[in-house]
Length: 259
Image (cartoon, rainbow, N blue to C red; front, side, top):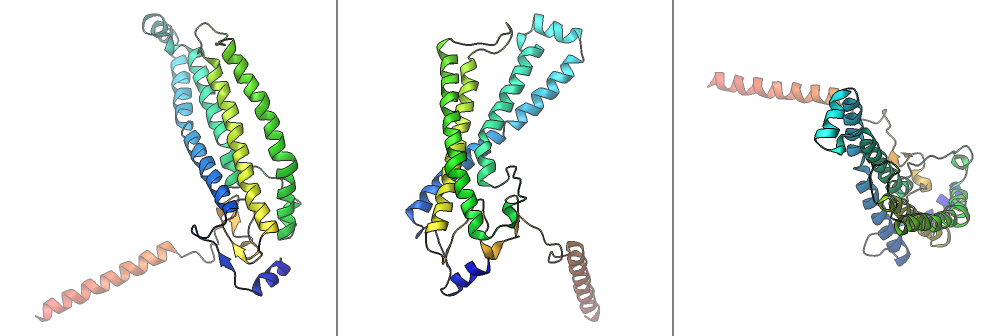
């Protein structure tokens, strides 16, 4: 790490802005924003997943009342229909946040080796993983996912249950979309890592999966690490503000009494 810092100390470090960011990083940022939007959209499906699950479990405890609703109101109250809605919601949630987890560096890592490496070795580790494993594997997976959903569309696949959901190809297509989003995330990070490896050494820009040497240790799983020794004591601050306010009130009252 010290070698990298020595190199950048020779010249002033330049932090890229949106106006002077190179095309390579602009493409990376565009893909990152796409993945971010897809992930945030997919994360909302946790709400129907939880609500439908709770409703299904509660309704199942009613016994005969659920049968009455199915027979006299609508089959939507059937447990099979609700369970399929549950796993459909879970599929959308899981598939669309795959890439999102990567660009925010919150995916599962086994960092017994990587975390102890120097900055450029981390870059090379990430670059090799993306170039030869992550992106190629996802392209193969995307190929089979497209065939999987296309075959479902051609045969008009429906649920194996008579009271289940139809148009099974729609949810299978979400799998292909989720993999495509994960590929976009991988390419976005690859562009950043490639620029950091082979571009100028005295520039800085927001990195997604690797910390700059001078920022090392400041993040945990993509989130800022809290240093409680430097964190302001909120209770003490409030107490001090209250003390000052009381002193001001006493001063105002004393001034009024003198008048």
